[in-house]
Image 1 (cartoon, chains in turn yellow, blue):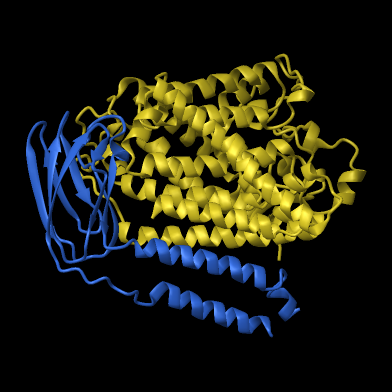
Image 2 (cartoon, rainbow over the protein chains, first blue to last red):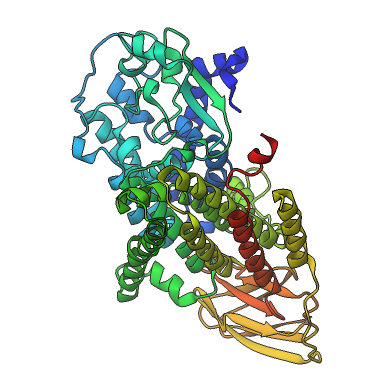
Amino acid sequence: MRSELTRFPLIKSLLKNRWPQMVVLFVMLAGFLFAILSGFIGTPVGNRNFGIIFVWIAWWAVLILVAVPLFGRGWCAVCPIPLPGEWLQRGAIMDPPMKKPRWFNLRWPNRLRNIWLQNLTFTLVALFSSVILTAPKVTAVVLAAMLFIAIGMSIIFERRTFCRYICPVGGFVGLYAQAAPLELRVKDRQICLACKDKPCYNGSAVGYGCPWDVFPGGLTKNTYCGLCMECLRTCPYDNIAINTRPFSADLSKPPIRMDEAFKAFIMLGAAMIYAGVFLGPWGTMKLAAYSVGSLAWFGYAAAFLAFIFGLLPALFLGAVGTGKALTKATTTLKKIFTAFATALVPLGLMFWVAFSMSFVLTNAAYILSSLSDPFGWGWNLFGTAAIPWQPYLTTLLLPLQTLTLIGGLLWTARTAQKVGSEVKVTPAPVILFSTLVTIFMLGLLL
Amino acid sequence: MKPWFFVALFILAGAVITFAPLPVTAAAPARRTFRVEANQFAYAPAVLEVNPGDTVTIELVSTDVVHGMFLDGYGLSVTADPGQTTRMTFTANRSGSFRFRCNVTCGALHPFMVGKLQVGKNRWLWRAIGLTVLATLAILILPPNFPKAETG
């Protein structure tokens, strides 16, 4: 079922050569800096500002509807945020210079080698999302903060610690990359075991050691491989392959850790809350989410946190516990809980796809007008500034969302069955839990 | 029984749930008028319920800045200046659930200022719930390794 893409010389040379990736990265970096600039100096009206439209509608649509489901961490391969920090850290832009790192080059603390901090940063962004998504200056501050934190961390720590442990986007992209039909793996593990210098991890004259702090020879999941292609460049044995594979190939390999399990709950819960707040008709909820610092906002934040970190995991624990009791399994509840949380990955991804369809199709019309007038200053660069707003394909929206959600449920149920056979616990209660949350999401969207 | 028999049965049941005509509660078409107040960033009332065939008039009143209303599915729109009332009249000849949205930039949360027009029962939601339950039944009844078990 796997097919190696790098067996095609054209694909392999495009990936091994630094130039194609660098060209894309430069374009992305220019767009990213322009988004920050437009946030600071452009109109404060969100739907007329390039920063808001291109980050939260155009980029988000590409990320969640295409990049993550099909290419996993493909976005991380061309993300501009770590770029300036990485250049500083390496003292080079293209090929690696033959000298030692010029900054502190510290190891990331062992206690923080998990994604709890990414769970925290995503939750913080999610709590303030009503303002971040709609206020250009706030979006610009958040984007600039990410850029400067990434630079600072590149100076203090080795490799891409920001991407691996802090980035609020990287956490969920890594989680959902497990479901993607694309992977980077070694061709023959024995070659890696026999390799003495391990240039894929330590670097060599032709490339850098893995920026993601991953030894490719030990890769079994997509979660932490950023598809940066350095190992493809450094491996002296041509032992690295990019493969296509069946969807969700990694998900049949539980267990995941508790930090990753909670990432699944955070994403699942946030999609449901967003569907209610942003797409529902309840103005009080919208105002509460927007009025940061008010009593209503604290109520919203408390409900948000209670739902994501309390109610959802508690209901899931009840389902898992029921399964354990029915099967009289001897495996610990914690192990079963984290193992079955893997099954929520497809459901969460499809919840986000369904939510984003509605959000993107109704706001896509702003993309053309903000291209012509990125700062909202009355320009008309490409003659598209006056294109009137109108939602697209709304008659197809409900059937598409229904199919997406039911498809996600089937995918999750099948994954739960695989997990169940691994941990020897009936998956039926987890499937029932997934059915109930799917019905809840249908109620919010339809 | 062979799993393929169940697959055929589920597909048939899915088609019935999706396409079967549902009983219609016959209500004579009536004239319905709603006064909808728009302010940042909500409509009040936010959910309007009418029967299919009703002649619906929406009086849009803005209580703060300029707001608008674009009705999905019907493609109708209207705008209202602060303190003024504008009207939109149409025959609710399409059943289902339709979002209406502000179509005049009115502030930060403008893209999320939405309401809902319900024409008749929300049948699509009930069909979707039916399909969800059917999908769950199918996954629980069919062997976990289906269709590999059949072909392999």
